[in-house]
Amino acid sequence: MNYFVLVLSIVFVGCTPVATYPPIENDTALTFSDSSNEPIPTVFAEILQYAHEHYGGMDTIVFRLPDGVTNETYRLVSEKLGGAIPLSSKDGVAYYITELRKRPFHAEADIVFPSSTGRYEQATLYLSSTLLEPWRVLRERVWLVPVSTLPDPNYPIGDK
Image 1 (cartoon, one colour):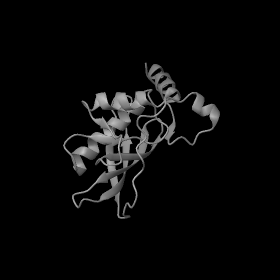
Image 2 (tube, rainbow, N blue to C red):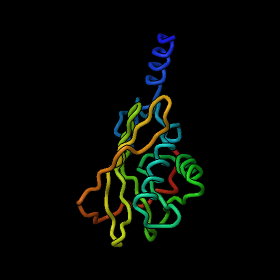
Image 3 (cartoon, helix red, strand yellow):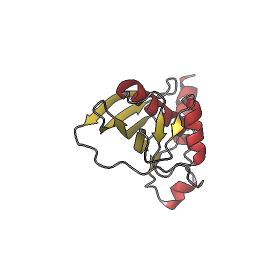
């Protein structure tokens, strides 16, 4: 029985995508990568839910995902968050996920969020999951570096 669990674990770890957004992988790796494949939308949703609960800043979640994700990913994340709204204009207040580094059972995300002072701050969130546990934020690091410019909206974008 333990042998079966070991083999099953190796198969799941081997099949779990390694992804970085914006993409830094070579063309061959990008061929097998799609931001709308699980667990990427779930990880994005967990990041945004955590930011909304811990940093506040708005009633309805408005968000921007990193470059390189598809319209389908935006749709899936919005559904997972119960109707969160993708940022489509420079004029709105939003959470900006600027980068995601996802490995088999760990992920790190950089997020820019509105603070209570009316300015934006940046944090790195560290997430983890197991075969039996869902993705969750384990810890955060809020950076004391001021955010001077925000990324441009990238929704709607052409499907890749």
